[in-house]
Figure (tube, rainbow over the protein chains, first blue to last red):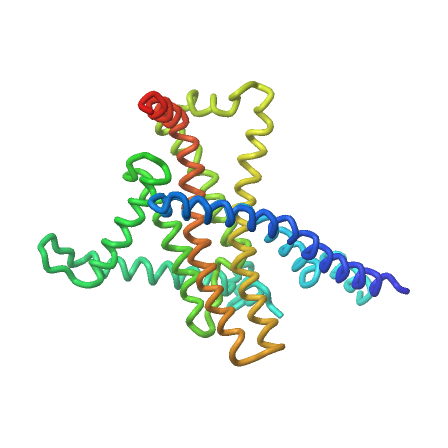
Length: 92
Length: 234
């Protein structure tokens, strides 16, 4: 197997693994955060504005770990520097 | 497939290159500036308002209220900066309903520029409010050992701010592009709607996080003092 197809294969597999493993943690974290926020709103409906705002900001920060994984996966598929270098070397 | 408007070059002249990102940023800036100028030209203090003045007043007062709730401070100094961040990102994301438009926030360059604005504004507000020495002393609290971690935290949260906005907007674009090739007509529209919602939430979060960072640089003493009094009161 030549270098080009090896790079392509490893990139695609790694991209899939990145988003698969990287979304497990944020999913569990967001589920816990939403569950706790819902029970907090159920106990104190008057504070729902504050709780919702804090929840959104917290969710965004938890979610950003998944977004990092997504960005890495996208880079591996669409803007892979090793792939570009290998195709430039093969073409030139 | 273009995953960011950076890849579309509209115009090239020597070293100068006009990408779609810059063009759409100018479009958003133009809309905001000219729109607000047209509305604020004929402001009235009476009971008869134009509907556009009403809209702007609702926007400004709700941003003020949010800033007051997040920072526990008077919103006067922060309103121009945080409000501009929110309005720019929200407009840039909402214009996605226009066909042919690509949100400039879907490019890492734009979001990095916005995050660097926050990165500079945080020490600026801190120094103006507390003086240079009092602000810099935040970095060596609770002890000298924490100095490198505080600096790393400052930089990493700037990167996080940029990548979060970029990743969310770009993921919406890529998702719609992939779905268009798999299940055209109906389903991409639903995801586009979800993208609009995400765009608004991300604009809100960007502004709130900028506000939280600025507030943590300016009011660390005031807030601990406030907490103490409430505990004594309870």
